[in-house]
Length: 474
Length: 82
Ligand SMILES: Cc1cc2nc3c(=O)[nH]c(=O)nc-3n(C[C@H](O)[C@H](O)[C@H](O)COP(=O)(O)OP(=O)(O)OC[C@H]3O[C@@H](n4cnc5c(N)ncnc54)[C@H](O)[C@@H]3O)c2cc1C
Image 1 (tube, rainbow over the protein chains, first blue to last red):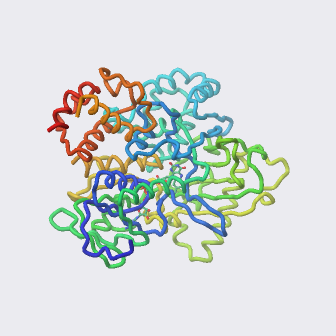
Image 2: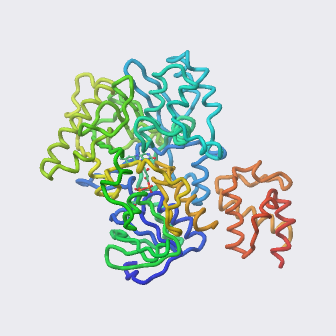
Image 3: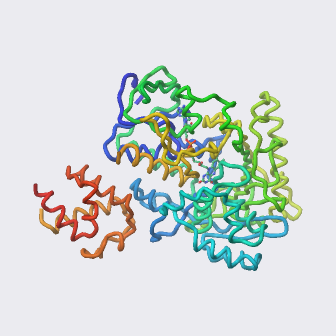
């Protein structure tokens, strides 16, 4: 496949071999289209890729595959993806979470994949709000409901119409924003409704071996269908004439043509390839949220340490802060994930203990540091994030985390930009979403993050729906 | 092709789209979407698979004719035998 692509014509060229690009590629190749996926990085997966460090396998992201529903539940996002990509459920080898928690000062709410448990928790902790909470859930629109996309109002305001306790509103918003809000402070009701459903009404699952088997499955499917792929070679420029992309220039100097271009690189990032957007000074980039994540490999099974939660969404202040970080890392809120705490089949355990901690981080700060300082500052931030998390996690009773630690790694917003080319280290992309996937060019469409569907499940669904709408069912 | 064979071919297509569905007991007179987890995206896929495998075109106005196995047979048998 390393023969020159120069001069070749395709039905569709897809920019990016992340979840959305691979899903779009599978759909198009399945229906006989000539497709080329072009990926800048050497590994597929994008924001949910993988790497090895000192012989140990790491996943970039993957706390949880959201939107998990058991077999037989109708009309769900997971079901749609499986059917559209012709994947059998067993192929994903999903195991359900043990149980997760939202932890705020003075209050903690447990939830798992059985929504009635969360409801019971809300009733226990916020009796004044339980009726409103139930009414809210009953009226929550579904993804298929066209009315959903008309409600662009504030999620905070909408929730206040149902729920009397401000503290409960903060606690519900925290996981929803961390798992998919591109916008600080608040998000639109439509995005919120999608996230609430995917986290609480549906749930969390994970394959035993992490993200790799999912990516392998997608790649194998794509390859078997005859799809072509060019790795380690980005698109350098989209040449435009008469309102259409005429030529796609690759970093190695090759140039290809296509009827349709689908880009998962992001809205502003894609328009930069066309020469229609600036870099950092584009106002659409300013409020972008950057994140940092630490990974600690433990010489212990976390549940033996009393760490039994799958995921903890926390805030150390009553009012939850979700905004561009002014500090290198903002430890006031975040997510703690323990991938060991899934119910793997046959009681299997992961070979090592894992602790992942995510918080908001400041892109400008991290990207401005010269190399040596950058590594020093990462050590400091690692300490800050883990020490903070130890205050949220059940006490280690005299043991020290350092003594239990076998290895660590950490990424910052700078890492995200380096490996995925998303501007300002943004994971959830631009504030502005193109829900229809359209751009100002007739044959250039967006899929993935900036089309508005986020997370692994969302990105897969985005690739599918954009391939359908703009190529297959045109 | 007989009506039965046409119905079987529709079931084969559905089995490929939704391999996790139990197709052993599909009632021919009942709407497919009432018995199985099939939505409008899946019906479009049935249409596209018919085009891909049998070069049969189903115009959008005729999508309702794919509602049940019986209506599929009524509508598609002449097309298969054309
Ligand atoms: C640390 C972390 C943890 C996460 N945890 C979870 C989780 O637990 N659960 C969950 O559901 N989601 C999680 N996510 C979010 C999820 O990974 C993303 O929402 C999803 O993967 C986005 O997919 P995408 O296809 O839209 O974009 P991307 O994955 O960003 O794909 C875009 C691809 O395009 C490539 N590209 C960019 N520019 C060019 C160019 N010019 N030429 C060629 N290629 C280009 C990039 O290299 C990239 O591979 C996490 C993300 C991160 C970073």
